[in-house]
Length: 355
Length: 254
Ligand SMILES: Cc1ncc(C[n+]2csc(CCOP(=O)(O)OP(=O)(O)O)c2C)c(N)n1
Ligand code: SF4
Ligand SMILES: [Mg+2]
Image 1 (spheres, protein in one colour):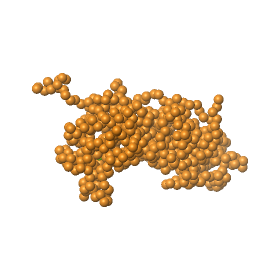
Image 2: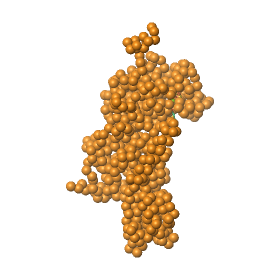
Image 3: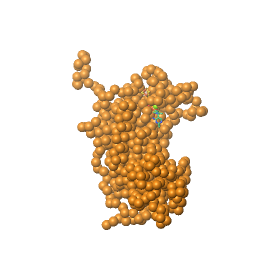
Image 4: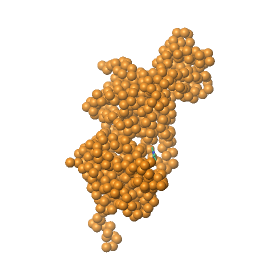
């Protein structure tokens, strides 16, 4: 029987973490995502599955606790929102460098600085271009619904362990806070495997395991980087995910992700009602980005509008994908403002059709 | 006794523990880090817990501690070892977990992680190497640098009015209900090294009983950073460091 519930995005992700067989959650409260740790503390998964939940003294500590647990081959995760994720940048770089799997959720709010607690997509660059130091990549999943938030918790752990790489769910204050119908997946078993790369206690028949991102010899550090880059090429080959709507006959194209894609879809329907043949491409992974799919559509459409709740970030990737084939413009509201479908349609008419 | 006789097994009275690897230590001659490593490794050996021990190396001169300890280890970011160890111990509660941290790592950049791990009473051992200086980065002032002491960033001596006073982390964490055993030792003489070893052994035994955080400070020398010979540095340490950082147990479990 289907397990259908009406749940808030943040709480649904917390439930999904327990059901995904997570071993540990470490987090620090911040709006608009504190419901995750509150739900977990209430639910007390130590009794349900043995999963450990701990409120850390800071996001710096939380991500390093994740590092420690991940280094033991455990399914470890944390959630936060923008200012907290900035504090995790150091830890994420170390986790990527040490090639550890973990899941990090950013329920994005408007910035910069303390910004606002209202929803935003202004951490796109931070999520997909780095955030921390060094040549590393997070695999970044961008849910548009509570359902996807839940599914991406499970998928996120799978990808993290498949590539031994940190995975980020790039949510936002809308998806985190809204209630929707959601189908929960069945309880998954916790991991019992002892990974060869994990610190589980040295066995007499093997060398000690060292989890580190340090290579003092530059030749060795370059080798690490080459290995990471080869891994990222694999990720780019295998893991691009997107959805497209009404693109077959499209003369124009919207590109939008997450909650903003839902509003943009409404704008698309309104445009179609007026006889404007516009489609929508919604990246579900923003790293790896659907460059090829957008490049193909660029040959077909007269112009592309990248709609974002920021001042123009994903548009840079859209331009890279399009590579000059057609006009690319950006439309955004930011600082916690949410664009209306009418505004988006108006931007299409002004910036692309009329422009 | 001929040399062959000395090294024949029945005449051996002391040997390197197999919990230390055969790699040549990168530490400067006369540095306390090597002796501190050895004491901890011997404890792991004697308790027979090599396969159940997970260590966390810091950023500092002992960043490569995992080359020398033949146990599974993780390298933490600067100051974050207690958080990393928390992640390990919470998910591997049956293992013996330790961090090994310098004074810059533990008492400056990692103060929050250290205090909160101790305050939660995390069941692991923190080994704190206090040499009053940033050894690795070339002898800059540490939070533990003594008043008036010269370093590359306090070239006229530490002026406590503008640079603050030396931070006594060990006394601080002893105040916290989460800590179980807090002691300050040194490894600059055989007698002191043996005391340190006893303290480390007790700490590991308390860990087995889940009694809370054990905190073992080792006041140590840094001949290179202090710009002294090893012998001078030990003498200077006795005359200047010990009065400020007195050796002995600060908190013992009842
Ligand atoms: C975030 C960060 N800041 C600064 C450094 C540079 N750094 C490396 S070791 C160190 C100080 C180490 O001193 P201490 O912890 O006392 O260890 P010691 O070398 O004296 O044993 C510093 C500042 C770093 N690696 N990372
Ligand atoms: S710099 Fe100082 S602490 Fe570092 S190895 Fe040399 S003597 Fe030891
Ligand atoms: Mg030091």
